[in-house]
Every structure is written in structure tokens, then in C-alpha cells.
Length: 278
Image 1 (cartoon, rainbow, N blue to C red):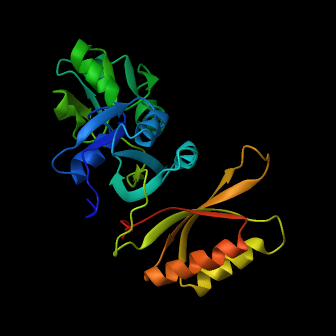
Image 2 (image 1 turned 60 degrees about the vertical axis):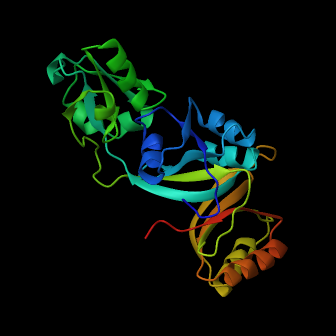
Image 3 (image 1 turned 45 degrees about the vertical axis):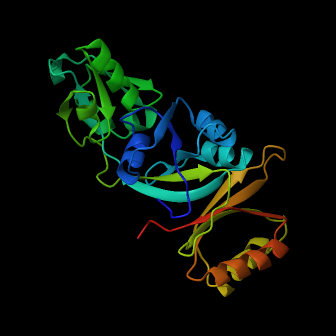
């Protein structure tokens, strides 16, 4: 955890055993008090109202791309990105210990998990795939009800939490599948070893405006690692840009922000933090 943060509670989307829980369990010790939320909107509200200290939100996947609604939530509630995490996504098919693969009639999980395991289930047409709000929630319900015809797609380690068996391991279509998560809070936190930032800009609709912005970044030794356009709801068919960038010197970043603010219509810093992608 970053040195300057006092940290007691966190909101996550999903329940114990979900990928969000896995990020918290793998990175924070002792485990903070958890608020399990049914949606990312609930996570953002819990942070904004200070019901919890921080929230954890998935922000993009190496296969599926950006989770655009979560960018909108960060902006709507004026949240700051404090830290980032990456995890390798695995999907295990789990069920009760009395269940066999042939006896399954349905498998439940989050829509994204089901979509990432289509090749495996194409060989099992007798199984109906059912969407749920979270990968781990079906596993929890299976354990509570001891349903012997239902399975769940869950991350590595979830089966042990609910005393279930793994019927098939690592059944995702792609072997390389990573998700990026961000820790969000209400206040900007700056530390000496920060070398990454997320900003939002709005440019004028003039020829060369994006070029001039990119030139400012180059001259300030700023590396733009991602540019994501998002619609501006109040102005149809116009867009803002969410940009991730890395830098070696804080002075380079400060110079860039000062000069870019003069060239853009709007510019806001959504947080500076340490780059965790090596």
C-alpha cells in the first residue's frame, strides 16, 4: 500500500471470491473491511459519501478493452485514481463435490467470463449458460444450496473458499488475459515515486489541435500509453479523451500539464500513481 494512505475499508464490486476480492486479498494485509457491492455505481457512491475509505474498480481488460461506464463514474463522482493493479484472469469451472461434468445442466457467471470461455462450452451443448452480476456469487449460492446440477465460472482460488471442487481448470479461450484495476478515493495523493498519471482533456474542433497536444507531450518527455475517447453526453457526437501517461521526472509532468492546459479547452488530472506494468 502507498505510504501516505490510512486505510481501513474498501468497496468492491462482487463478493468474496471475485476478481476484485482477489486483488484486495493479494495486495493488502491485513485484509481491510470489505463492502460488497452489486454494481460499480454502488462502489463509486460508497467512496463519494465516505462510507468507505477507497473503492476498487476494474477499468480495462487486455482482450475486451476499456470499461467505459467506469470512466464515467470516476468523472461523475470526481474520484481520484490512487493506485493500479494487474491480475491474470483465469476461469475455473466449479461445482459441488457430488457433481460431475456430465450432470451439469447450467453454468452461471458474469457475462464477460462466459464470453471468454466459449470454445470450452461449444463441446458441451447440454449446458445452458446463465449470466450473473459477479463470477463468485453463483459459487456462493451453489455452496449454500448444494445444487448438484449447477456450476460456476470463477477465478483461481474461489473453489477453496466455498468448499467446491474444480471440474475444469483454466478453460478461458486465451491463455494471456489480464485485467487492470484502479483504487479510487476522494483526494489526490502524490508521492515521490509516482511515474504514471491519468488525465482527461477536451480539445477544440480545429485542424491540428490533437497534433499540437501530442507535440507538447513529446517535448516534455511524456509517454502516452493510452488514449481513450469517451462521448460527451451534453454534446452529441463530440468526445473527450482519457489519457494514461508515464514520465520519469515529476518536473516533466508538471511542465507538460502547465503547457497542455493552455492548449486544451479543458484539462483535469485524475490522479498520479506508480506504474505497475513493467
